[in-house]
Image 1 (cartoon, rainbow, N blue to C red):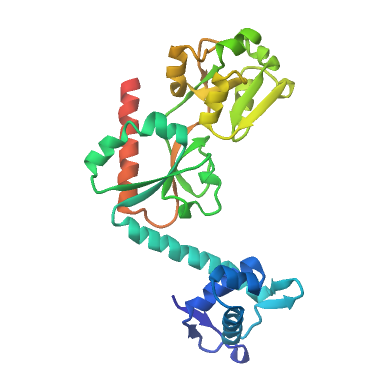
Image 2 (image 1 turned 90 degrees about the vertical axis):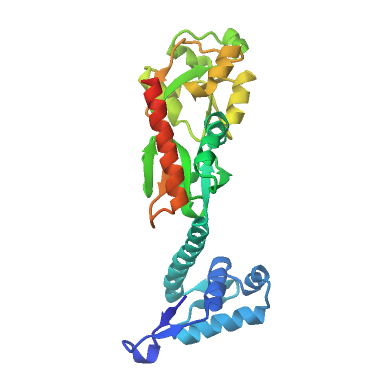
Length: 313
């Protein structure tokens, strides 16, 4: 990696190259932790080595990058500018290294656990038959992939539940969803539900935030503020078990709870499903061209989506 300096004494003169990437890496850590001792511990080196590299970088650039205070190191204006570019540059290097590795057939996928276990796992065999050299690396997330600061460093692509309005991603809606209102038979017996307003007396269970319930209540003429209580849970599996155990009422994509409804551990008090603007999406961070393995996985997912839509038509 080649970085450039412009000597202070000759502004506008021909730039020279700074070749020591180690100084740049040390500068990044110091800018993050604001302390030479802590930086040395993180880098497993001596304080004198850290100080040397920072001083060398400042000498080469002709600017002070830090103010030394009793509390530690504070970035100067010039240091703050450099820090922002260094972070972007090193992240690009990391992404490049991962993309080169991906050319060998590896793809990192950010997955929602319930989607993985109830839809994806039973279909992966077909993908592996088509692309036997494809190496999949699965990384679970709690519907947070689209909101990460640097999602490309977490995975090459992901499955996300929501409305599909995420900037910085190529977004493919997998299929339209319908929502089922479900609870345990015991909960229904204790909290009779025959019309939407009866949910005033119920504990509403949800994951991430309350937007799904807010949409459902609004579409069914119920004011969200009148609802008695709500409980936010960590993930869909926990939400499902909590619903089965009688903690409250949940909204699920109808296909996710078919087995539980058939077995009777859950009931649908309304006997029908409801329209929603929410759905599962395949999302890919925008940026550089996707690697061949990423394209293979996306093509397969969208092909399966199309085949499923034909069967349901």
